[in-house]
Image (cartoon, rainbow, N blue to C red):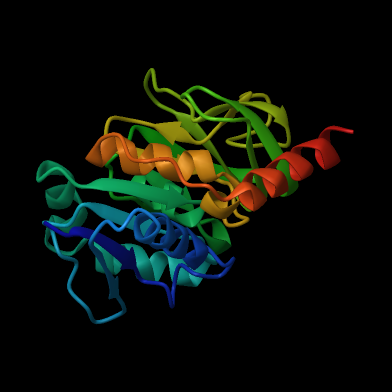
Length: 232
């Protein structure tokens, strides 16, 4: 059986190099000789509903609006979750999964409604390094945030991390990202799974079970160096 990974709309949601998250998952599966395929769904393509993992990246206002118009068709993402798919979403992708998000000229755009969050316009853009203490069993999380919205929980939800540095979901929230049974969402670019190899494996193992460890100390070294650089 081959694992299926779907890279969604990279021409719209690929502004900040988040395609590296797809490459990272694929590389880590290859190192373990685990059969898998990566399907890229672009504008005009149809979202498959029977895949294992779906990845959404970041994008600007117009691209984000165009992306949700495509993803909302025929409830493709909802059906994917109902069929057991998992989602990893970054920044604009995170906002798209919620109830609504802001756009230019004061517009409020309905989201996919797959998670109980809403995003509102912030007074000041959040730009810079972000570090958080994870709520899951992985190492300290590190990334680069660049977003003009603040995302607030509308229900009792589990953040991906508790902030040590940066703005994360919003000023005063002390939270970064979100974890549900099938979704991991974050504001971390970097790309996030390149900078946090343990998170990459956690996402894979949650869906597919325990996997053999990978000997690639350079990734852990770079992760630790970034943590030290920001914390010093």
